[in-house]
Length: 60
Image 1 (cartoon, rainbow, N blue to C red):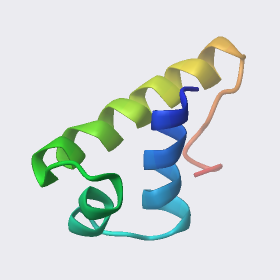
Image 2: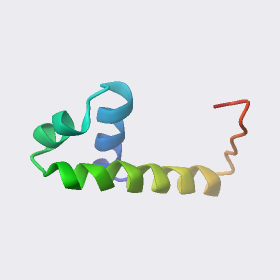
Image 3: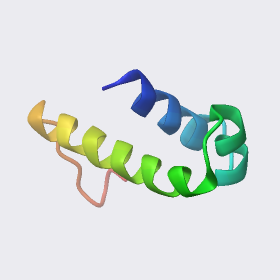
Image 4: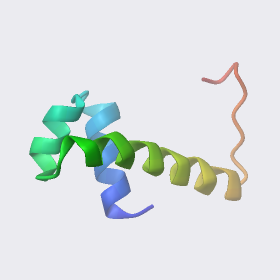
């Protein structure tokens, strides 16, 4: 996982920041933050799948 993806997901999931706060923290536009977490989650999901980690609705 890239440092950028890890940073965005950390700010969303662990810090609980909203889009405007994340945009300010990273020095990017709010529009960029609308897209970046989605793409980071998709890449993270793909990496987990490649590692053989599977999720079911019970584990979420």
